[in-house]
Image 1: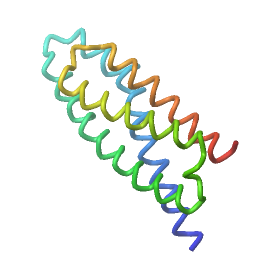
Image 2 (image 1 turned 30 degrees about the horizontal axis):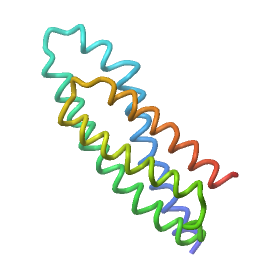
Image 3 (image 1 turned 90 degrees about the vertical axis):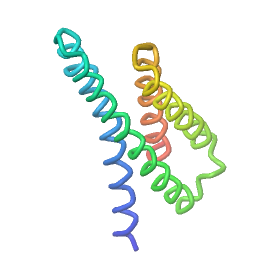
Image 4 (image 1 turned 180 degrees about the horizontal axis):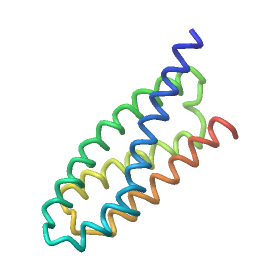
Amino acid sequence: MDDMWTAVRWLHVLAMAFFVGGQLLLVVAVVPVARRAPDRELLRAIAHRFGVGTLVAIAVLLATGSAMAFHEDLWASGRLQLKLILVALVAVLVIWHMRRPAWHVLEVAIFAGSLAIVWLGLTLVHG
């Protein structure tokens, strides 16, 4: 049974790594280079593809996070409640950003929210 929960936690961390790591890659490398390129459609295609992958990662995070919250009896935790509110907000921001990619303030809000979610997740486990 412990192996199953290790696998659930592994999937959760993998999805989080895709979500936050992908944002870091976009911010640090892809967007600065692609904005100087004459073909802006390439940047749009990369961002859109990452947005779709992000929605899949969020679904995995919700499924595995819910399972772990039940297993650890964390539903009454204020930290978990705040984390879930931020997850919902970031999911809405991702969808909004996919529809309005020129609104760069959404990128900042998504990234800041994602970092806060990771922090809260770590405090749930190690707090």
